[in-house]
Amino acid sequence: MSLIRSPITGDAIREVADVTPAGLDDAFDAARAAAPVWRAVPPTERGRLLVEVGRRMRARIDEVAELETLNTGKLVADTRREAERAAGCFEYYGGYADKVVGSVIPVPGPFHTYTLREPYGVVAGIIPWNVPYFFAAKKIAPALAFGNVSLLKPAQETPLTALLLGEIVAEVLAGAGLPGGIVQVLAGGGELGRALVSDPRTDMVVFTGSARTGAAVGSAAAAHFAPAALELGGKSPQLVFADADLDAAVAGVVEGIVGSCGQMCIAGSRLYVQAAVYPQFLDRLADRVRGLRVGDPRMAGTQVGPQVTQAQADKTGEYIARGQADGGRLIAQAELPTAPELAGGYWVPPTVLADVDPKSPLLQEEVFGPVLAVDRFTDEVDAVELAHRTRFGLAAGVWTGDPGRAHRMAAALRVGTVWVNTYRILSDLVPFGGVGHSGYGREGGADAVGLYTWTKSVWLATDPGVPSTYGKG
Ligand code: NAD
Image 1 (tube, protein in one colour):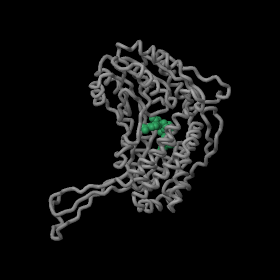
Image 2: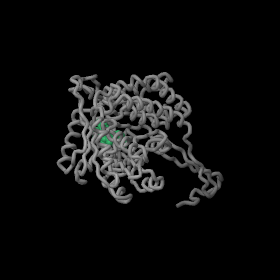
Image 3: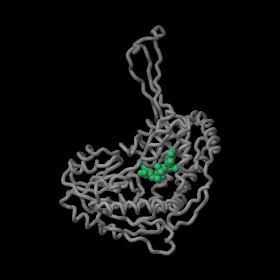
């Protein structure tokens, strides 16, 4: 059993039964039995069922957002948007289900040669605690659309909305007379995740989480030759040039680090500002951070909620202390809430530090909290060099009024996503993923077809007299 607590107050919300090893065995049996059944459902019909799931999800957006906020401590505005995106994800991949095609290849000789896209079978999806409902949708919908079945494990801290999504999908599939094994949401912790990805009954793995766990997941999957996509963490830079709209840049930089109380893989946790505007930018940034309203994420007007667990809040506090010990000058810090009913919550003040030693863990490791380290740069070359001073490569923000510079920077940065004059914008229509320690594989858009299917090549001799060794080698 896992006791689920709300990070807003520290109060217990619910107990959730964790899946036992015997339960996992049953889940594999059900998934493997369901795989050929689901695969045989015509893609157009699969698509219709996914769109129906999306419709039912839309009808429950308020309920989901409320539960997600209670469990994760994220602002209702965020959890609502994520619930809408999750429904959209089912609609998008529902529409995509019957648009996956192979190709005919004009090889020389008397052959009709073509490719087919094949589903893997049982896809294990593992997700972190920061965006449970949307990530569950993002793992389940494309897997199903392209003919796979899904075993989805949410994080132990935040399983509630993923379990709810599992119920919504099961309801729709059962209504169509399909077996329950097509989608199963399995509650549990790291041990269950390890067992899931190590088991040869898993045909493919899609993982979102930390780099450290991602490395273990990649190895465990490789040991039985299951392909894995790893969406890992980041240490993303925000680069502000002197020619940028500085008001927009301040707003984007702050939103990029305090959103979800910093618990975003894409958090823009390193800020580099061109020297000519550095002092004035820092002043504006400091004003804005000091004025942030940290508090109950269910209340209108709150801008920053708590961290997900006390352990995460403690860890972020340790990074702040370490950053200061490594030369960091405190530029600004927001006030924490004082309301007695929030005293048990997991609060961390949004914090800006300047002049931190580049080798400090604060500048090298992912904090996953609202902590921004700032420094200055001279020109484009310097900005790119600073941006690349980390092993991660998930995202970067560029703020400039010069379109040519925007394209030069987008080309030069070794990251999976570059935002120019905006930040934290995402869509299922657009591929997403990282390079380096931010992982590999791309979810989203057409890339999801390549992720969730493999290519089979078929050669058919059109001349019965063709020798079997024709063109060999
Ligand atoms: P985590 O890596 O600790 O856990 C992620 C998931 O893996 C959880 O469900 C956990 O139970 C499971 N797990 C733990 N050990 C496992 C093992 N040995 N084998 C299989 N599964 C195992 O991450 P977290 O602390 O829950 O989440 C925060 C991390 O997620 C951050 O690093 C963040 O950057 C990353 N993240 C990445 C993205 C992205 O899209 N790139 C998005 C959001 C979060």
